Amino acid sequence: MRIRAGALLGLLLAVCSAGYALDTTEAFDPGFSDVEVYFGYQGLDSPSESSAVCTETLLGIGVTGNFSTFVSFSAEADGYLANAEDGFTMGLFWTAIEDEAVKLDFFGSTSTGGSIAFGVESNLDFDNWGFQAQIEETIENKNSNERNLSTRVQPLLYYRLSSGVELLSAVDFEYAENEDGEKEFDYSSISFGVNFPVTESIEMITQFDLINTGDDETQTGISFGFVAGV
Image 1 (cartoon, rainbow, N blue to C red):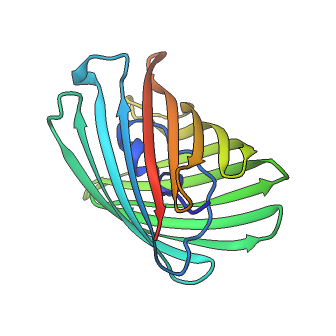
Image 2: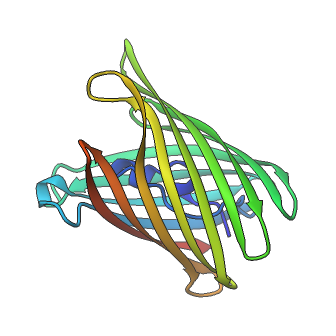
Image 3: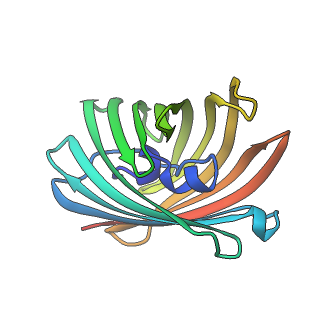
């Protein structure tokens, strides 16, 4: 498995929802070696004005065997395909420790709008299942005098049904300011996914989200993506 855009930034679904694309992560092959396209929809059970459609395209480049960089472009609109917004992100990913059962990764990125993110990810991998934990810190510049700091924690479990086919489940937690300006720690989404190969060089990523929108309310969301090795 290669590194996934959503696994690093959640850019696709951080815009549409609180969810992050579910996948295990590895560095890109050296050179221009990865093209990824994702689509998402939040608010299957909500009116169009309260829904969101989004997409992201990512290009990945492997610098060395354990160091990678990428650029991605994302766009979002409401359920009427109006009020569109877009964003551009650049990032890097470094695998510091890797053996048969244990892996430790560090990552960082910057996005249009003044957002900077950095984090760490650890992975325990066994014969046909594994556990992955990710902690990400994001600094968002609201204006020249105000900055918002948030922390995301995501534990993820995965199980391999067969070669290349994975079942995944994760819970996203976030420590950030609420509408009253007070810091609070709460879950932002519960996600389930199935990833499987389409061809030898293309993998499909699918995901279903239960998204915490606040005030004890939730929305449902879906996303899918294609990852192609070049």
